[in-house]
Image 1 (spheres, rainbow, N blue to C red):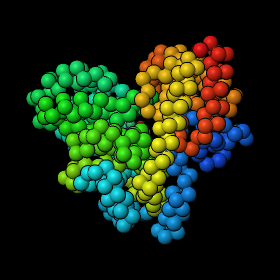
Image 2 (cartoon, rainbow, N blue to C red; image 1 turned 30 degrees about the vertical axis):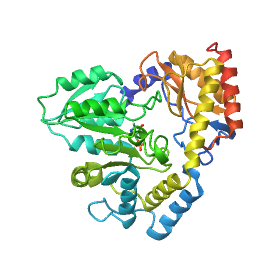
Image 3 (cartoon, helix red, strand yellow; image 1 turned 180 degrees about the vertical axis):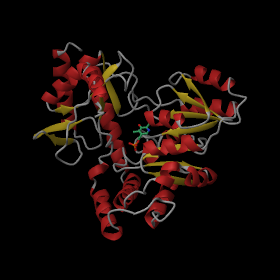
Image 4 (cartoon, rainbow, N blue to C red; image 1 turned 60 degrees about the vertical axis):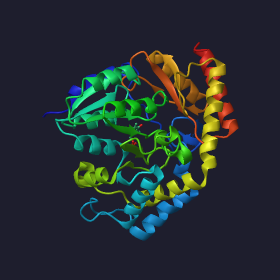
Length: 391
Ligand SMILES: *Cc1c(COP(=O)(O)O)cnc(C)c1O
C-alpha cells in the first residue's frame, strides 16, 4: 500500500540540522509570563504587542459575541455569512486607517492571497521586496502578473525594476511595512516618491506595524505622514490586535472589487461572532488606551538598549521586534534552549525562515512586560550569551 514514508528522509535531515519545530504548548492564556511544561517563563516570542489577547474588554466582547450571535456563522460572507457586526468592524477599520473602505479576511495570510491573486492580470507587473512575508510571495505565485524582485529596501534596485516595467499596464510595488525577522521599517517615503515618478501603485503589509507604529497604532503609512498616498494597506487582526484575521483598507472601488473577486472571501466561511466582536473591541482599546502603545515603545527601547549594552548584535531593528544575531544555526538553537532553561521563551529562527548563516533568536517585548520581567530576561540573555561565548 502506498504511504508517505518518502517524507521520512526529509524530516530526518531537518531534525539533524535542528530545523524541525519543537512546539511549546502553553498552559495559560498568552501574556508577559506563561506556563509551559508546568513552569512559568517570560514570553518573548509572541506577537501580542499590546497584551490584547487577554484584555478584559476584548475577552468580554468575545463572550458577548457567542451569547448574542452563536459560535459560528454558517456561511461565507457573500451568501449568508455577513452579520451586521462584520460590516461594523469593516467601517471601524476604514476609519482607523483613514481610507474610504475596508474588507476583512479570515487571516492576514488570506488577505494577501485574496488581493495579489485577483487585482492584476498578465498585462501588469508586481515589484516585490526580496524579504517580503511568505503570504505575499504565495499571493504573487497565484497572480497572472509578471513579477520582479528587488533587493531588500534597496531603492536603486526598485528604481531599476520600475524603469524596466514601463511597458506594463499597471505597476504594483509591494512591501512589508515592518519586516518580521529583522524589525526594520520599509523606506515608505522613498517608495512613494518612486511610485509617483513611475506611475505605480503601492501596497503595504502592516502586519507588524498595526497597533505598534503611527498615531494610536495606525501603522507605517500614518507613521510617515503618508495617509492617502498608499493604495492598499494590509493589516492583521492576529498580532497587536490580539485576535485573528486580516484586512485590506483602500479606495471604495478596490474594496468593492475584492468583495466580488477575493477568493477566500467568496469560498471560505466568515469569522465567528466572537472573533469579530473581539477585534472590534480591540480597535476601541487602541483608541482609548494609547498609553499601552507608549509602554510598548518604552519597553522595546529599554530591552534593546539592555541587549546592546550587554554586547549583543541586534541587527537593524527599529521596532519591538529585536533579533539577537548568532549567525550560526546551531548557536541560535543553543541560545534559545539555554534561555528556556533560565526561564525565558525566545525562539531560535534559522533557514529557511531567514537566510543561511543569519540565524538569530528573535524577541518581541510587549506592553504587558514589567521592568522586572525585562531585567530578568536581560540577565538570562547575559548569562546564556557568556556561556556560549556570544558576548
Ligand atoms: C504575520 C504576517 C502575516 C499573516 O498574518 P496572519 O493574520 O497571522 O495570517 C501577513 N503578513 C505579514 C507581513 C506578517 O508578518
